[in-house]
Length: 114
Length: 113
Image (cartoon, rainbow over all chains, first blue to last red; front, side):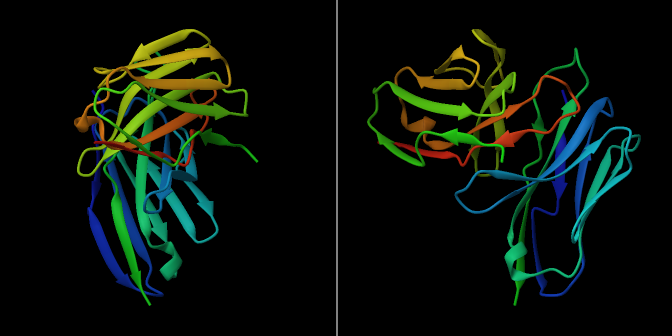
């Protein structure tokens, strides 16, 4: 069964700092990897989707990379802002015939201090 | 703008009650999912459906059932609510094709007293 791990569980940084969140997964047979943001008490908002054939995706100040062979993805946030404070989750989708669900990490709780 | 809508943001129910959580998506997605989210345990899949009237058990189906009579609607049913079902419930949908992203609803915080 796919296991997804996110380290660290919590991170606190001063405003303006660049930061990297990590996601690792045990089975490289994935279709894609998706990064989400979750604000307290809310649902998940999709940030970036990386297909298994891609190495990275960018959206504004966010850049996600994928190294499928090593089972790792990183989410890079440039010039962090207090509004970036949230929990960030990664999820992997396995290849067909190995399951149709998304497997989630437990998230990294980010606090950006003004 | 794509949308997954859960019928309630907050619910308080009594032990033993039958509880219905409703989810509607407007994207013509084949797949729909119900997850629960608990501190320290992350998101765990309860059930998913890949077509009307089709369903498959996820990792924690005990105490739950589902219904999908129409493509856009996926209902989660707690047959007899218990306090250990107090949780955040999240509905999601996606296209059948594996390369597409999942979209989530705003979540339902259920408290069973």
